[in-house]
Image (cartoon, rainbow over all chains, first blue to last red; front, side, top):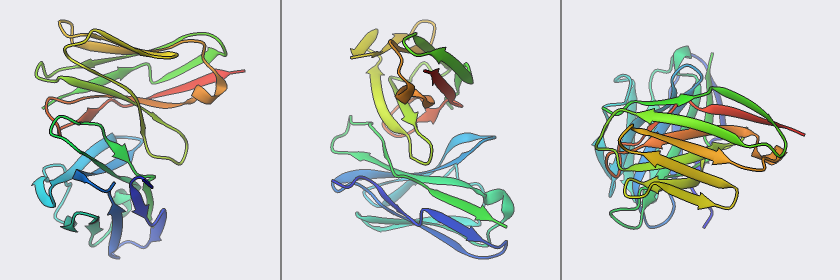
Length: 115
Length: 111
């Protein structure tokens, strides 16, 4: 398996623009997570899905952030409009294959810079 | 919710020495404690994990210990090598999905 695949690896955009980050989880995994990593706040859980359904989005910082999972092999995290303070590395992770399998597998991340 | 504290934030050791990273957690319901290694430009990778019904687990040069009474757990790396240099994160989870991470420890192994 190729692991969790994220795109793009790097994104540079201007304040106010819409940003869409993409994730393909490991095949067969039924949980998908979006994390944000910054120097100040470390790794923060933004939202997670189970069987394509959003379960907990309490970590989503503002209404500017939204996430979808239209099918088991694809998820997006959208920021609209983007702001400089959104600059961070965004990770997607997946887990599953069983109720008690908590092992998270992370993608390589998207480095987002909002100018 | 769960709060995980990790220390030290940076650790420098000589090649061949041991390294120890410690974490504490707040939620007594947490029962799963993984450790992740993150190399530059990559996502965190699971290196070892332990569940609450076990006090210690080893995998070659890496070991993790858990003290549920005191709510702390530690990562031990023996015979460190330069390729062990990375940022290490501990985490705690009270259920399958609500995993909280420590702030990370930057380990440098000097040749």
